[in-house]
Amino acid sequence: MARWEPDARLRLVQAAIDLYAEQGYETTTVAQVAERAGLTKATFFRHFPDKREPLFAGQEEHGSLLSEGAARAPEGATPLEVVGAALDHATAAFTPEQRAWGPRLHAVVGSSDELRERAAFKRAHLVGVLTEALHRREIDDPTAGIAAGLGVDAFHRAFDRWSDGEGPSYGELARAELHALYTAAATLR
Amino acid sequence: MARWEPDARLRLVQAAIDLYAEQGYETTTVAQVAERAGLTKATFFRHFPDKREPLFAGQEEHGSLLSEGAARAPEGATPLEVVGAALDHATAAFTPEQRAWGPRLHAVVGSSDELRERAAFKRAHLVGVLTEALHRREIDDPTAGIAAGLGVDAFHRAFDRWSDGEGPSYGELARAELHALYTAAATLR
Picture 1 (cartoon, helix red, strand yellow):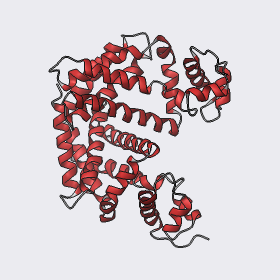
Picture 2 (spheres, rainbow over the protein chains, first blue to last red):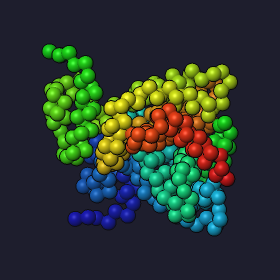
Picture 3 (cartoon, rainbow over the protein chains, first blue to last red):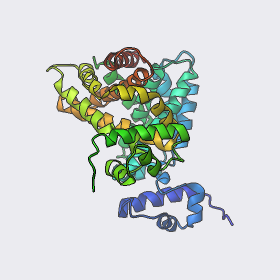
């Protein structure tokens, strides 16, 4: 019965963000999201287990990109350089669609405890994945965990700044945020 | 109808940790937790909204202690000193009961995506509260957020080490973890 739905996933994400922003996350149903996307409820559930997940559709891709980028940093790179390489590689995830929907996505996630909880879990997931990538480069804990935490915070802060306007590229912002976070961390004493 | 239940909350936490560790989180019901604690389901729901929450019963207290401790640091304290003062004050939360149930709590939370997600949200909550306490001391972002993140990570790492054995006091471990995390952060470059 499955039709050919080349961009079904993207359409569901777009429809979810639009509807949650327009009429509220709590009151929107999966059926409404599917209808807005021109798809069936069954198709929604082939792509996502529940109505939260379209908002976090990028989690696995973001983790993979950060991990691959970390692996590609030159031999002998410092922990901060490895994280910088991870962020450079993650730039591939950030399309014009995402820039356009960023502010609405941010507002929707901030509107619900359930979604803020899910966002915290996404952070923990990405920190875990990036920490493992640093371990594979023989960077141990606690250094690996700290570097990964700063990297993922830079990743999210750069997304918020990038999707907010017409400014620098995502990659430039992510590097700048990482530098700012590292500088702050190094001068806490 | 409410009976006098001076330690109902603590008994429910203890019963939840015990049962989830013995027979699994997914398969344990609220009714079973209440029964193990010698209380009714209605009493459970007066203390907690669902079966996850007994495992995170300390969240509000931990946030308040960190926040109060930060407020009590001497004038002119650096961000790291303020966070150290917050951790010192949080020591008040750590009773012998908690030392005893720490390893089981850690294992139970690690056994379930739902609980690991809730734990990530607790981290985000504590980082938020501590960041606000640092703002009130005129420490700005990103410094405040970074200092709070390191502080909350030290808070959790110290809890895991402390509840694992008969070693140093919680306060000593928290200070040592904070120092180790700061040192790691300052040498990432």
